[in-house]
Amino acid sequence: EYTGETLTGEVDYEIAQKFKGMIRRDVEPSNLYGKTVYMIGDSNSDNWSNGKAKELEKRYGCKVIGLGQYGATWETANGEQDTQRSNAIGQWNTFVETVGISEDTYLFPEDVVLLFMMGTNCGTKGTMTDSVKDLAEDVSTAIGAQKYILRRAKYYGRNIPIGVFLPWRGQTNEQLEKIAAYYKIPTFDISAIIADDEVSKGLVRPDGTVVTQNFITDGGNHLSQWGMDMFERIAHRRRTHTCKFIGRQTLQRCGTLGRATRRRATHNQRIE
Image (cartoon, rainbow, N blue to C red; front, side, top):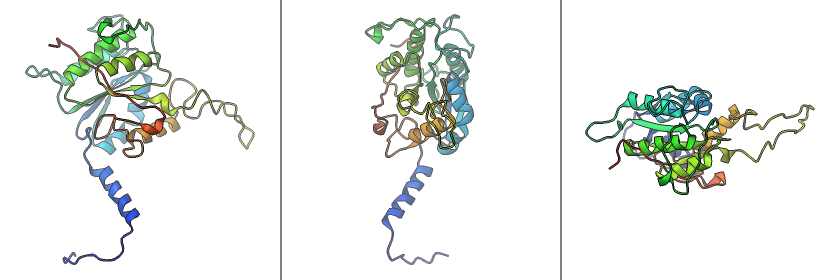
């Protein structure tokens, strides 16, 4: 029982600081606490939200709902009202229908978060213009669908955290990053954690077996389990990597990744 005495003596400063860091990591509120995180995407998102969602939920006190689907594309041939999860337009419309938009403020509810992780599948890429402002919102093309969705996401979601993960081997990463930047939506380039092409392929192990694929990837378009774990460590780190994309603040900088990360994106109904 504590009697009010003052504790005296030597205190190991390093241990004290580590303990303080653990307490702050586990109890400090993040911008995800108590919120529902919706993931729009393809197999990258589907793999992550099904495999890593519980860890994110436990760490940040949120709930994750994955709308992504294997093989999904940004574009659709069925127009802006598509509701199929095989494309981002359909997933977007499902998200809007689920959370709703306030008739008074034209805002999404404040207890939601919207993340995008897709781009490895592309049927019709489209043509990028010099200015995002001049880019047509043609949802039958990938980059047209990206502008259509991000513009509206930013407008109706100006009160919530929004972020875009640029996938490894994303076919429209350059264009997507430019569109997101135009709308001030933060981006996180997953390929930044992957060394130049297949660095481990062909390596002969001590037992004589030969490495057949990059250890960070699964040999195809996805991160391996090891790659997922590495990505998670970087995304969750607050100090050394300062990746606040998922932390208390929106993404600012990931210096140790070798590339500065960005920010950006927007929305519409009728933006006045």
